[in-house]
Length: 244
Image (cartoon, rainbow, N blue to C red):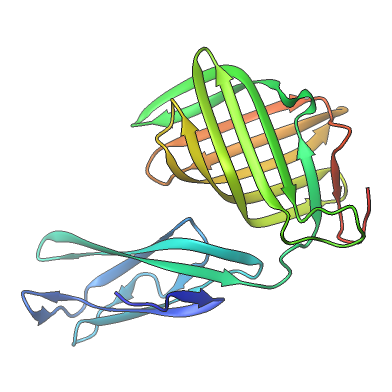
């Protein structure tokens, strides 16, 4: 399988399927990408008489430079065949549709988290801290270099951290709701270490901040929680032209 080392907004993925040196015609090739970003068309693709196949990967506008793994899977000769290549993708557009600085008041809030590891579901209780600074600057503008989020949870000797988070996309609604979806590295003693896709939302209800954090490595290991906390006075959510 082949692709450009850097795909900007859209790019062609091509390949050749053979069996014992002979081309395989009519095989269905299914494509996936990790972290999940963009769409393939067609998906699946069908191999031609010479065994060749192709698809186009389209990356959504506003996607910052991201290292991904593209996988193609098919069945041939009664066996599953898989190949993976590494590709960087991006699609610069309005990188910062808004800006925000959010965090849990006091650096800790009680929370219960649902964990899935190795097919086993577990619920843990403890305290959690979440911070996210995206496109934020105090000036009446957005700063694309402002890109960081972190999650830390602990309780009963269990620790789960998502560190050095980098955005894939962000959104804001008014000055009360913010969302970031991106990638971060998991550390701690519960989840397998590695890169996870993490989505954080922060809204308000009844004078409290309402948070959700969901993470997955797309290999069956997941983290999910919803919790409330007092509103942090340094919170800011707004348009690029707004100022704190």
